[in-house]
Amino acid sequence: MKIPRIVLAGASSGVGKTSITCSIIYALRKHGFSVQPFKVGPDYIDPSYLSSISKNETFNLDVWLMGKNQLLSSFISNSKSDISVIEGVMGYYDGFEGKTNYASTHHVATLTKSPVILVLDASKTARSIAATALGFQKFHKNSRISGLILNKIGSKKHENLCRQALRVTKIPIIGVIPKDPLLKLESRHLGLFSTLDNKTLYNKIQKISKSISKNFDIDQIIKISKNTSKMSTISSSHFKKPKITIAVALDTSFNFYYRDNLMALQREGASLKFFSPVNDKKIPNCDGLYIGGGFPEILGSKLAKNQTMKKLVKKLAEDNLPIYAECGGLMYLTNSISSDNKKHKMVGLFDAETLMTKKMTLNYTKGRILPSIISERTHNIQGHEFHYSKLSSVSSDSRFAYELKIGDGIKNSKDGLIQYNSLASYGHLYFDSANYAEIFIKNCMKYSRR
Image (cartoon, rainbow, N blue to C red; front, side, top):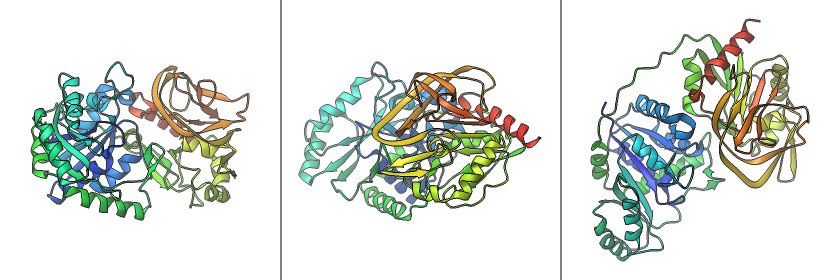
């Protein structure tokens, strides 16, 4: 199977990978190509930027969460456009640990056999940029680097100095981007603001992408993307006939979902209906509820004022409706969220308080999951957590579904609060790393047949 593809990697975080990836997608689409975006790592925010430019849903590629086989299966099955563009994460060789490249952008580029375009920040260097490029080129016996993009170039003289120095690498320079503070996207925590229902941000991404796209040798990028080996074909997934309905919270507060997770639910027989905990007064008739991550603290006041929604969610939980929630969803189901010296009352399903902090918790997680609404037996799990909050006043008789060896979780290396038929955790899971979607739907079916 022939899949034209490229990976956009950075020498480090903060070199402009996301804006440059968006700009390349923009340029490819202007040349008449359809583009399928992917994002290395567990991030939820950057994919929304890539989706807004490409007009296609972005899929994550994370070896830790998915495993090698699932990663390749997702990449191949979802590469249905003219060109697949993969945005990397952190520095090119930065992975789960310092000893290896495991779960790094290079690891994903190697698994997908993709050529790599390396983005270098040239703002505070000239001839020395060649040492950086040579280091990345020779650090691994097969760097896969097929092109360079120089970002934040100060002048034509600065560009010439960099070009002369980089001749030693024999790697083509396929983009030179001038230094311009306006060509920058605002950050929120590690990611960026979500584009969902944010027209101002969407317009800015479009404007930045259009501006930067003029600085690429797009013909060379297309040539690099096509200079790839064939990949194995995979059998198409069989989607079962819809048996039950799962209501999914989706608005500006809750929008962190892996596209693969939603597809896994659909494949196993779920019809998905979306609703807004911020704005709606009703939840669609359903047999299960899925509340993903996001930034509930940002619209804490609006969430708190929607008394009808909060009471309805709690009533459904008390009625033993299967509810699965992650991170922001967990926060919403606690008694309250305290942020900026304000306390916003939430659903109150779990007897705990959410406190926003300045400390970032960012981990891959590993441990065991006990029998619950997404698992019929005890087995090992791998996931990730990313939040700027913690739970306090957690009831001493709380029950937990996860026992962690790696990761902070909610309390004492435990995560996954259980109440009635609800499970809520700081940790995020990739459903197809086990049969989570299948078991969740089985429990939803039991509820619907009562």
